[in-house]
Image (cartoon, rainbow, N blue to C red; front, side, top):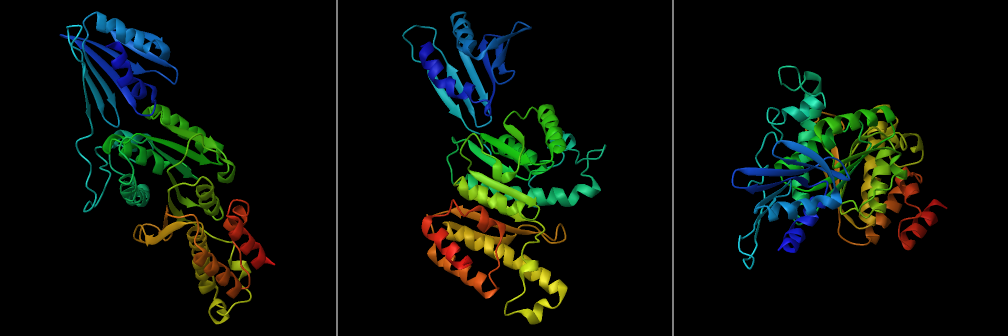
Length: 384
């Protein structure tokens, strides 16, 4: 009987990202077990609290069962496990699983995140005024994040509710996006998720760690690292980047390709690589105007990123994820891995390069070793 209980609970209790607390009842008496940190738990009974190691959790559960605690509820973000243990020895243990009953419908929602409901979170990341309203200088950022997260739900619907989702936030900065995304995925959608947030600014990462502790978001990791150097400890499902500056966007896309991430959501920021390369091309009559030249450079950069993504097997959708009144950098590149490679897209990429005098972007350089052999040879041939 105890073995059955352990089998039903072990994966839940061991998952530090998903597990909330375990409650055992006997009449009016209640006992609680909840995670203190990575390796230890707290055990609460009759008003007293003691610390126990992970290996002792089931010993305590077994003792409680022997003492008449026969109703068990294991609360998790992704849903609860409910266990009823019969009083007779030969009785059958009853195990039921409950999922979050409400999946938010965002199809017609003006705002996904309710500032009043998410007050604790938004206050911790300093987006609220003292009277609970989104700060005036944070409203544009709030709308950007809200619209970005609306794009996540359709991706999650393509995977099992039981699957933990790993998300890599490249160039995370103050990690507004990941904090709010974590709140929505775990607390509103009931999804078991884990975040890797990386940035080169050590001061910002340290502050993020403090906010993580304040919010008790143990399913988030913060690392000081260049995007191209970071190696996550688990297979990543979604790579996202919101306004990673210049070639950091290329690093984010390259990292997603190298990790074979099923999905990417990339919003590029400023771009400076192409503009100085625009010397020999058929649109000189346009680029003699500096403003047009800058816009063409931006367009070419993102077009080349898109074609490379398609060439390595991603289906790409390019949209304006938010109105330009909230940010002029409002182009979203959304990619979904559907095949190993696409020769037509690579041919179009090489043709585009040739038409504009052999221009190149950092993404091409970053992927020189990881692209398939045939595509790598095509790029090297074009560069000669």
